[in-house]
Length: 335
Image (tube, rainbow, N blue to C red; front, side, top):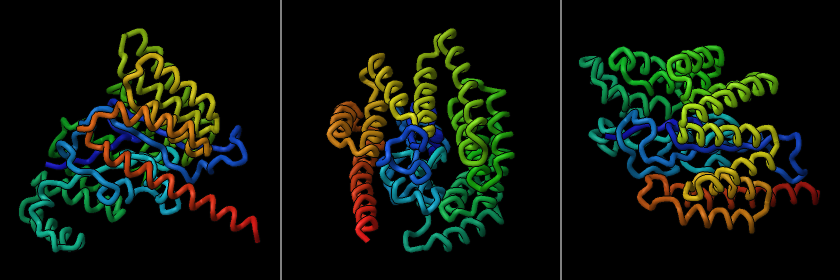
């Protein structure tokens, strides 16, 4: 079977990483934070098992492309498997098993019609519903996708990932109140779920104020203290990645880099901080330092990691995109 991944950040489950810059302390040549994605990197190959194990993810098969606004889409290609524009989670999806039974020659619209015809006679077919969900999200038909998740939750009430997916879709659909309420409901049941905190950060950044973002940051910091007291090391690292993401959003690049450096000192085998540092340095056009970090990342990321090739491909895309933007800026200045 295939599967949808929310790397919140996203969201992903335990291992992730994000970024996106913002003005305040950024140097003049810094990228515009509103046009750069955040990155969530799953250290584990199996975060959010909504559709089973992933297979062959690539830039052309990710649902993240469907959810990222066009202004940020090109940049989003640069930032790896759970990408998102400033605080927008991405959904990376592998093909769904039911879809794979449909002829390859069918267009997406024809697949939708075939699945809807099938569901008319078998409305509780979970695989078909998940396949239809993938296609609806891909087509950016988010109200339809939300309605399908409602049906799936009724059929699979124990699936803890579905409410999180629904919350993110509400946020993408421009309903921050519904998204916030769902994220809060999720956190009331699991106060250590980093993906839900990421959702709150995303909503605060996209729809609310910097003050609200600081409120969420305070909550994240309290969660970090709880993780320390309870010895939740994996959750602690995920929360630190989220703190670094918030710092980038605020334009506090040095603070974000310090978080990553500390994480490297604590666990030098985790590839995520190197990848995140490399992306920040690339955005700041410190290419030598960026390549140094990417090199460390490439040495550590497991070759069997389902997104390893995707990361590599997208780092190339990022460099091309940034060069295009630089050339465009120079052309404007010459006029």
